[in-house]
Image (cartoon, rainbow, N blue to C red; front, side, top):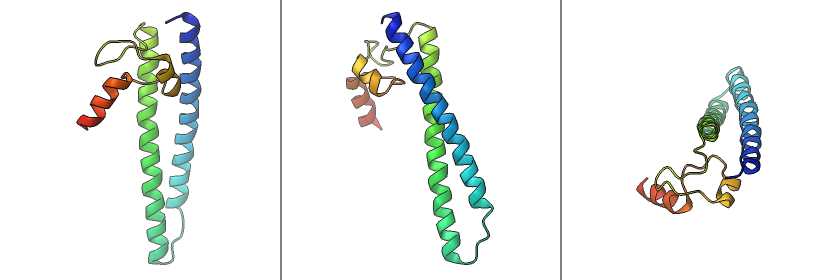
Length: 116
């Protein structure tokens, strides 16, 4: 992969990382606000509980993506970026543009998803 392509992906990953960090702060604030509400009946409790579950799920997904981004940035430094972790072939640039923290090429991703 050329240096200009690597720089593009570093910028893309760093930008997404920054956005996720802002999202996580927002989720934490939202959870705090939900926990501070004065609830009057069971309907209110159910609604807040549902909102809490949704916010926690979003936060967990964002945390996982953040970890994957950190791994991808580490791979760029180690000159291993864009290599499939399963078959060790290059991941296509089109796939990396869609998911810059991809660990697998398209074929191997399908295999992994079928196993789960």
